[in-house]
Length: 428
Image (cartoon, rainbow, N blue to C red; front, side, top):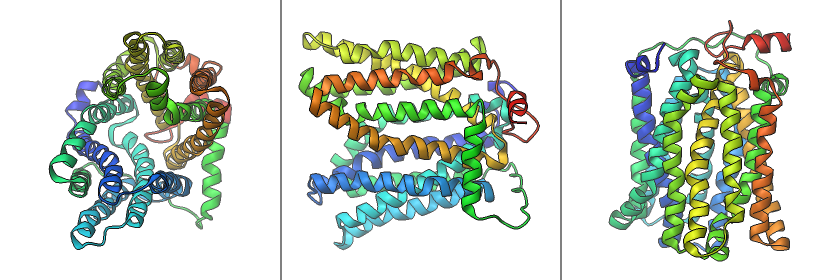
């Protein structure tokens, strides 16, 4: 079916509307929660680091188990439940503030549980979409949701800052709580019935089911290169996450205003990429489009470690990779998500998605540690260069794989997110 038919699908529109609202709310909390810790609780560096650790641990502890739960249970009720619980947690923050009981320890708990439930939601969501829209429309559905995410990234931080300024950080978080309620409501009114989960003859231990998901990733000629590329990108991408702002400020001498403009360009690029991803994939093929976007993004990205000279020149050199690199990366990620969702049997899709999520986020802290070591030893610019060079190798996983010849969305006979004929042949 065409992408225009997707826009006439009332159930997809409900899903899309709810996720658009939720994405904006989540950006508000991502901005307001650290400001709450700083402005209201006067948190120090150690306490601020504790918030980051709490979020990371929440993702890592839950990721693999979340995938197994998603494959055992119906996805839509799980999505609704995780939204409602996150809403209640966020409502507790302004309530505690009004009652005089707000402490940084509560923020740790909120950050941990919201991150954990967010991981569960993401696994269930990726597994739910193919069954809702059909395998042939997954690419377009992913593109539309990515558009919402990009819009939230462009306007969300400014909106959050204004809210904090006007109503205060504790009450700005209410926006995210309400957005989760809106998301839950949009999911609850979807009319399309969800297929029952396959029955099991004697439920196996959850560890065995987790291993099955990991084995599926390892054996799949289409999913494995996507997972390996994602892990590589997250490891070396953490070099940028840890050092990019420091590089712009200390090495290139950009002002805070210019830094904000450069970073905002990434959101604009992501928005453009989300709108163009489906068109490029249809023109040159799904696999080739992913490879072309990854390779071109890497070529443009070399401007960042090379940036130097007067402030205006340096700003342009980092602005271009943010704008065009993020556009290309978004197109690549949309294609990769689509491959995973449509090349994986529905019965194991939650575990496959969770395995990739776990591995990708698990290597990020290690990358940040290595980045700090390289920066202390060789300098921040050298560390950024290592991050660029290492990240550029991620495209090799895609190029030297069957994805290079993948022209259309994988599909088969095992359900809405079925294995492709290529995988069926290789995996036997």
